[in-house]
Length: 265
Ligand code: GLU
Image (tube, rainbow, N blue to C red):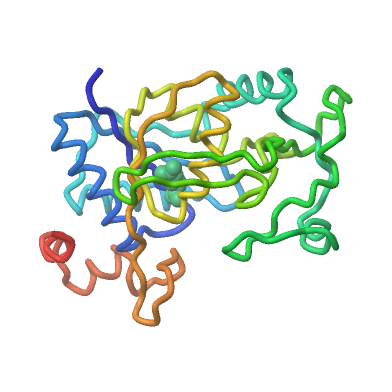
């Protein structure tokens, strides 16, 4: 099968220079391999995603010179696919229902932290059994403790994460009926037969989580290429709230797509 890639913005704000560069690299890699690029709008977080950001992202991507196959694919109408995967994981015993709030997790005396200072789920609910009949409850994936999760990144080379130390039991399904990013992305990359995922290096640890989901769901994972993150002048990661480096404001200030692209060449 030929190369299949995707660009997958989340419409919670305007795209910035970092997204543009990542998407451009995704397109280049796809182009070099003579493949097909899809556009997936990751709009599951109904509280934060807005239709105007979806439209703005499409417009900004077209302005930049990105081209994809077919019409953009929205995640929101695909809930039945995520639900099916969630049920499979739950029925196979990979998940546990969790009543912990964010505050409970942050304040748990036993909560360890990973190298990034992220709190690892302290395990409060992990021995709860499935099938308790709770419908409005969060569900987490029970990660095997101390297992090496390895992959070779096409940009960063060999990667090793230790499950339970570098990341803990992670959310798969939320009590409001919304799947987690980790679940949706795995279900979709598999369903869309993506052969290589190109995305930002902030998601390297998520790749390790996702590899555990691929295995639990008996799905074949794609390859991965993580791009370096862009930093602002203060050395901080670009975020959607840094409006100065949004593609919109760069365009309004007269930058051309060619100028942007030449800076990444
Ligand atoms: N939608 C995610 C984001 O904007 C990217 C997901 C991915 O590429 O796996 O951060």
